[in-house]
Length: 287
Image 1 (cartoon, helix red, strand yellow):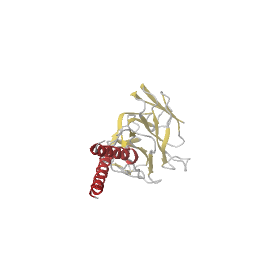
Image 2 (cartoon, one colour; image 1 turned 180 degrees about the horizontal axis):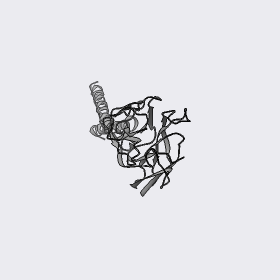
Image 3 (cartoon, rainbow, N blue to C red; image 1 turned 90 degrees about the vertical axis):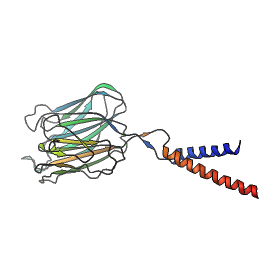
Image 4 (cartoon, rainbow, N blue to C red; image 1 turned 45 degrees about the horizontal axis):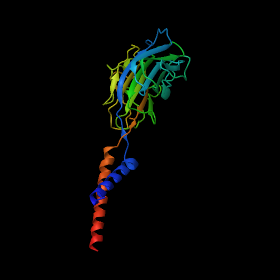
């Protein structure tokens, strides 16, 4: 082997060693594939106790993120299922506005929760069904299909207006995330305040219009934000309202391959090692 080939071999070995042992991982970018939402009815006059919402052509390996809100005391979310048999994990839950109902001075009236599930198979249609303990109003279910994210290490946050205090700014505790994560927050309120017409989202976020007409929820999402952490702060333009908020951050998944940072740094180290060997060779020859 010539000395030139010897140098090239050293560069390649050092470069690969750095890539495999010390280089940072490569992350995918999260992408919102599709979204939809539905609700039962307004605050009163409801007759059903379940809400259904569908997505079309869902893909295996994508993640479903589901945000649910409901209004009024003595009501609970009893089940969340879909037509392809996904197993949903509750990531965040918050309740608030205690004492809104006569005869229930210690019971909360506003609720919000976030769930996620990884699709184990694709399907031409997937219908989610959220079932509640009673047909009280203000129920909404938002579902988002996301690609390029992992559920491992999901970060969540919650927030709520202090009891008997109506506010115009909604936010959660700070939630940290990696650049390119999928971020979602849902606010449950007692009035019209959460509709996009009245609510300004966090910069870099997009709101989802409530389809039900219940006027009790709003959501905001982003798959492009890079400035961490965030408190999912939304601003209401009207008078103060009662509210609770739940949020989640799903980081981008790690993909296989050789990161360019490792190749560059490994090459630099390889060249430096070759230079040292050349100097040592010259000293040896001179002596």
